[in-house]
Length: 133
Picture 1 (tube, helix red, strand yellow):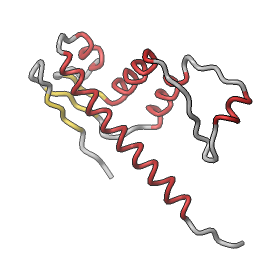
Picture 2 (cartoon, helix red, strand yellow; picture 1 turned 135 degrees about the horizontal axis):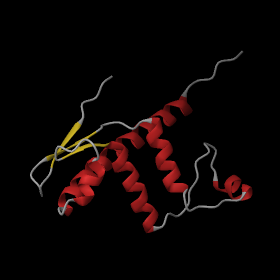
Picture 3 (cartoon, rainbow, N blue to C red; picture 1 turned 180 degrees about the vertical axis):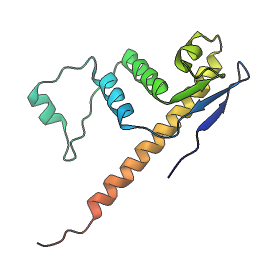
Picture 4 (tube, rainbow, N blue to C red; picture 1 turned 135 degrees about the vertical axis):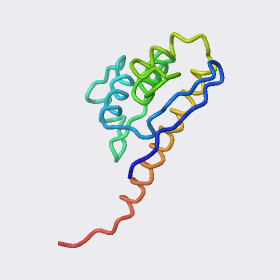
Protein backbone atom coordinates (compact mmCIF):
# COMPACT_ATOMS: atom_id res chain seq x y z
CA UNK A 1 0.00 0.00 0.00
CA UNK A 2 1.51 3.32 -1.10
CA UNK A 3 1.72 5.98 1.56
CA UNK A 4 1.72 9.70 0.89
CA UNK A 5 4.76 11.70 1.87
CA UNK A 6 4.41 13.83 4.99
CA UNK A 7 4.49 17.60 4.47
CA UNK A 8 5.80 19.62 7.39
CA UNK A 9 5.22 23.38 7.52
CA UNK A 10 8.49 25.03 8.52
CA UNK A 11 7.83 27.76 11.08
CA UNK A 12 11.19 29.50 10.63
CA UNK A 13 11.76 29.87 6.91
CA UNK A 14 8.07 29.58 6.01
CA UNK A 15 8.64 26.77 3.52
CA UNK A 16 7.92 23.06 3.69
CA UNK A 17 9.81 19.87 4.37
CA UNK A 18 8.84 16.57 2.80
CA UNK A 19 9.31 13.41 4.87
CA UNK A 20 9.10 9.81 3.62
CA UNK A 21 6.40 8.11 5.75
CA UNK A 22 8.04 4.69 5.98
CA UNK A 23 11.39 3.11 6.82
CA UNK A 24 13.33 1.08 4.27
CA UNK A 25 15.56 -1.84 5.20
CA UNK A 26 18.65 0.15 4.21
CA UNK A 27 17.50 2.82 6.70
CA UNK A 28 17.23 0.24 9.46
CA UNK A 29 20.76 -0.96 8.73
CA UNK A 30 22.17 2.59 8.70
CA UNK A 31 20.48 3.34 12.02
CA UNK A 32 21.76 0.09 13.53
CA UNK A 33 25.29 1.03 12.43
CA UNK A 34 24.94 4.47 14.06
CA UNK A 35 23.62 2.97 17.31
CA UNK A 36 26.39 0.39 17.47
CA UNK A 37 29.24 2.60 16.16
CA UNK A 38 30.92 3.22 19.51
CA UNK A 39 29.95 -0.06 21.16
CA UNK A 40 32.12 -3.09 21.84
CA UNK A 41 30.61 -6.37 23.01
CA UNK A 42 32.16 -9.68 23.93
CA UNK A 43 30.36 -12.86 22.92
CA UNK A 44 29.39 -13.42 26.57
CA UNK A 45 27.91 -9.91 26.84
CA UNK A 46 25.90 -10.45 23.67
CA UNK A 47 24.52 -13.75 24.91
CA UNK A 48 23.71 -12.35 28.36
CA UNK A 49 22.13 -9.14 27.04
CA UNK A 50 19.74 -10.75 24.55
CA UNK A 51 16.22 -11.83 25.45
CA UNK A 52 14.27 -14.72 23.91
CA UNK A 53 13.53 -12.63 20.81
CA UNK A 54 17.17 -11.61 20.34
CA UNK A 55 16.59 -8.04 21.54
CA UNK A 56 19.30 -6.28 23.52
CA UNK A 57 19.34 -3.41 25.99
CA UNK A 58 22.28 -1.06 26.41
CA UNK A 59 23.08 2.58 27.21
CA UNK A 60 23.55 5.15 24.45
CA UNK A 61 25.57 8.33 25.07
CA UNK A 62 24.19 11.75 24.16
CA UNK A 63 26.50 12.22 21.17
CA UNK A 64 25.44 8.84 19.85
CA UNK A 65 21.78 9.90 20.13
CA UNK A 66 22.53 12.95 18.01
CA UNK A 67 24.28 10.75 15.44
CA UNK A 68 21.30 8.39 15.34
CA UNK A 69 18.88 11.29 14.81
CA UNK A 70 21.11 12.63 12.02
CA UNK A 71 20.96 9.24 10.29
CA UNK A 72 17.18 9.12 10.67
CA UNK A 73 16.84 12.61 9.19
CA UNK A 74 19.20 11.77 6.31
CA UNK A 75 17.12 8.68 5.57
CA UNK A 76 13.65 10.23 5.62
CA UNK A 77 14.06 13.93 4.74
CA UNK A 78 13.29 14.17 1.02
CA UNK A 79 13.07 17.96 0.70
CA UNK A 80 13.83 21.00 2.86
CA UNK A 81 12.44 24.33 1.69
CA UNK A 82 12.54 23.13 -1.93
CA UNK A 83 16.03 21.61 -1.76
CA UNK A 84 15.86 17.98 -2.89
CA UNK A 85 19.55 17.59 -3.81
CA UNK A 86 20.86 17.68 -0.23
CA UNK A 87 17.97 18.48 2.11
CA UNK A 88 19.85 17.38 5.24
CA UNK A 89 22.67 19.82 4.58
CA UNK A 90 20.22 22.57 3.60
CA UNK A 91 18.42 22.14 6.93
CA UNK A 92 21.70 22.14 8.86
CA UNK A 93 22.88 25.29 7.06
CA UNK A 94 19.62 27.03 7.98
CA UNK A 95 19.50 29.46 10.87
CA UNK A 96 16.04 28.25 11.97
CA UNK A 97 16.26 25.83 14.88
CA UNK A 98 12.47 25.59 14.96
CA UNK A 99 12.54 24.10 11.44
CA UNK A 100 14.98 21.41 12.56
CA UNK A 101 12.80 20.66 15.58
CA UNK A 102 9.67 20.36 13.41
CA UNK A 103 11.42 17.98 10.99
CA UNK A 104 12.81 15.85 13.82
CA UNK A 105 9.37 15.60 15.47
CA UNK A 106 7.81 14.41 12.21
CA UNK A 107 10.57 11.84 11.79
CA UNK A 108 10.12 10.63 15.37
CA UNK A 109 6.45 10.07 14.57
CA UNK A 110 7.38 7.87 11.60
CA UNK A 111 9.70 5.78 13.77
CA UNK A 112 7.14 5.58 16.59
CA UNK A 113 4.65 4.12 14.08
CA UNK A 114 7.32 1.72 12.86
CA UNK A 115 8.01 0.56 16.43
CA UNK A 116 4.28 0.14 17.07
CA UNK A 117 3.87 -1.89 13.87
CA UNK A 118 6.80 -4.14 14.81
CA UNK A 119 5.42 -4.67 18.32
CA UNK A 120 2.06 -5.73 16.88
CA UNK A 121 3.78 -8.18 14.52
CA UNK A 122 5.75 -9.72 17.39
CA UNK A 123 2.61 -9.93 19.51
CA UNK A 124 0.65 -11.65 16.74
CA UNK A 125 3.53 -14.01 15.99
CA UNK A 126 3.60 -15.10 19.63
CA UNK A 127 -0.14 -15.86 19.62
CA UNK A 128 -0.22 -17.94 16.43
CA UNK A 129 -1.39 -21.51 17.01
CA UNK A 130 1.13 -24.16 16.14
CA UNK A 131 0.21 -26.98 13.81
CA UNK A 132 1.16 -30.58 14.43
CA UNK A 133 3.16 -32.27 11.71
